[in-house]
Image (cartoon, rainbow, N blue to C red; front, side, top):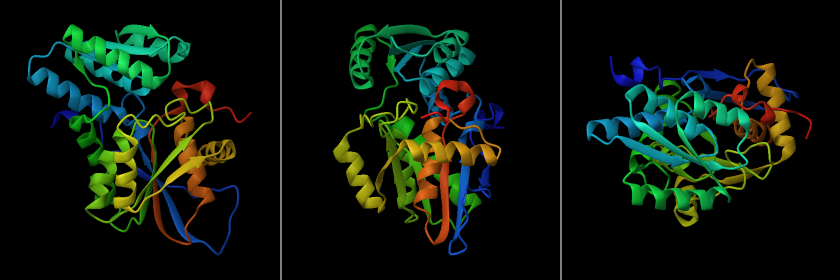
Length: 287
């Protein structure tokens, strides 16, 4: 048994959404969901963290770190704890107590700093370089990008007839890895971002991997960059709950956009990147 299977990371199921707020018989399309929220810490970030920790332990690296709004930091801390690697996480001093409690539970060394995510990335990378800590931040990290390729490999294996993919985007690591794999099969991947304050993991679209690089991949992949509205998130939250899913706001944004832009034919797969139970402040419909 390989390490990912042993830790139950990856090979997440694909489930069809069959209950919508509205139904239109003119549509002959199917919306599917790739349930990355079933990874151990409830997000797709476990795939990236596993590869990072595997890389570090194989080379005798004892300390690893990142800046995070929540999911990646929690995931990296969890896997670091299992493999006895010291984990440092830089976060905003406005981090929610729920997210902070997970970091503490997994033994992370928490560094609270001022600034937006882009600024925290820069500060943390500088500190990690000066202290000899492995830097797991975005910015050309091929290990993390390759981990996201496996999501597409599972989709095309399980649903060979898939016609498009929708997923959330912020720093771009997830999107670039997923799209690079999908391009080989000529499957467009659409990137969803939002300025709704509930979706902290994609709020504002930092594009830390480089906006030019992201736009080039969108064009190459024949995808698109789509802003989700607050109503898209509300629609996504309602729809996911009716289908037995509690998703974080970033994933609700993806579902909401898929509902709003439903193609008349084909199969669209929405990547459900995170579990809403970790972040109760995100799943309110009162927006």
